[in-house]
Length: 205
Image 1 (cartoon, one colour):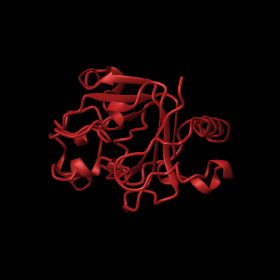
Image 2: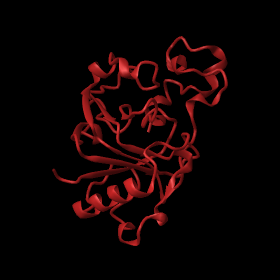
Image 3: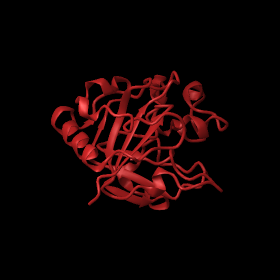
Image 4: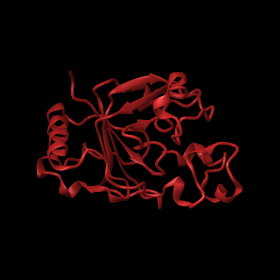
């Protein structure tokens, strides 16, 4: 199996996409093909591939030079099946925003740091290559296979698996927010932290 790493910038780390809750890390509402657009990570990635999200300059992210999460794609589920999968009931991302989603990527083998993002400077010098971190839109996948293997092995040996930090700007920051608060029936007291319909497309990644 080839060692492939997709690297992209998480400009808005709200805990929705990626979503590191309940023992899974999912990528559903970010980095997918928009209607009329090109295939993106969610369409291109295959089971066994790796996805890494690094920090951006937004106040809702961790800043450049930081790793927000790293996940192995363990399942690639049709979006319609993800919406009714009981394993994901109550999660922020189990909803249809009608953006043309086709797939959901699921990992049970991941490192999510969130606001405690791991500095790339902490990696072994041999892994601190310009090919590791993406800047700007879209993604890169040009890290050599031996580097991908070395990176994932180093992370497994030196960093905790699962969720070890909270999102940089969690949707649940308001005390009255609950997972169902991202649905149309959300309580008015939570509206301040729920993205508006205009913001959804740009705030989920």
